[in-house]
Length: 222
Image 1: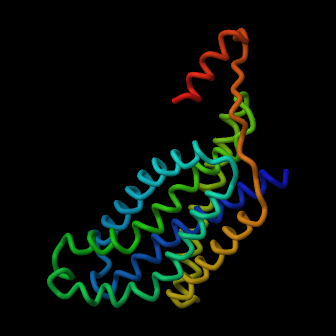
Image 2 (image 1 turned 90 degrees about the vertical axis):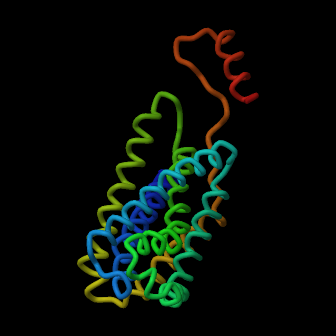
């Protein structure tokens, strides 16, 4: 129970930080690009792109992972990106100059460079969690569905808390740094407390053992 709770908590916190950064990112860009529809289109596009690429990369890392150590490394690197963002974001945006600031595609370029790395890393988290939370073929739907449900809950909380609390009562940079610290602590805990991945054995209900073994061996040989 503690193992599953830890993995679901990781999903909630990662989802929270992902969507909170999307909301706070608009405020980071606002002094240079305004707050029009182009800004939001750029931010949403970059975050969806990063999730797609992150899912793809995370799935391949998960296939080779036997514990939560790769998950810990991904989260810690994402935390570093969050901690560094307040340091270099404004100098970078200032260095782009008026030509980029006034170009319609300028905000897309800025969003890509600023937000793709941390959001892509957080996109890797879900496939890694699926590998760790998966307990058996007969419960794969329930386990994966619950994982995505709690992650989506974290997404919603990240949007609402960022909009109604962080932007109103806290400094923008302090909010981003706070999320970086939270993820750094979470990643460190995953390093210190090992969680084994699921077994490579596969059992197909209703199939003869002799029919299953060759298929499993072929799959593992790929």
